[in-house]
Image (cartoon, rainbow, N blue to C red):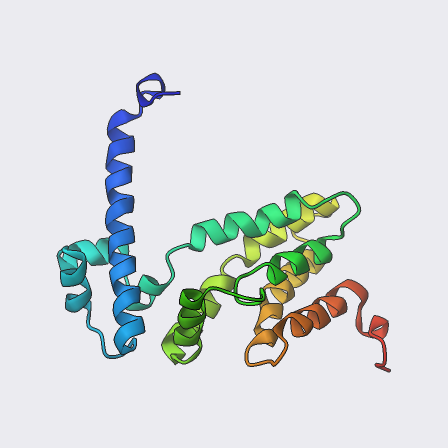
Length: 201
């Protein structure tokens, strides 16, 4: 289907240009942060590296921390799809566990650039706190999908609790020698309850 057929040529071109500018800014910021450290890099330096004005930079990224996290919308879409598109017979907690285990942070053999990115975030308190707050913003959307998929009321507190704890669970992997086991253990609690954990009384 062509842009002419959809009648969206001007908007499509404009959106593509905006997306390219946003990506150039984010790429320049991450490169500088990885080279010199988050605190050592200023906004003007990033704008210069991306060949944009600081005004343009702030139109795309209202705060400095946001420069590091450019895939929030995509992350939420993948999170919700993990629940909606789970295979027959797979529980919602199990689907969320598999989604968490599929993240590059916990997958074995992650690429060097992402390892460096993770180290940057985990070693910078401002980025670590921002990432956590940003991730928890998906709680309401995830709770709604859980309620929808399980046939429960939209305001069911159990759905909200499962959404919240499922989003918190990956934090148990931070600094753990075996992040996959840490995450699996956390989701076993969500799936089976405390009494269902082997060896716990």
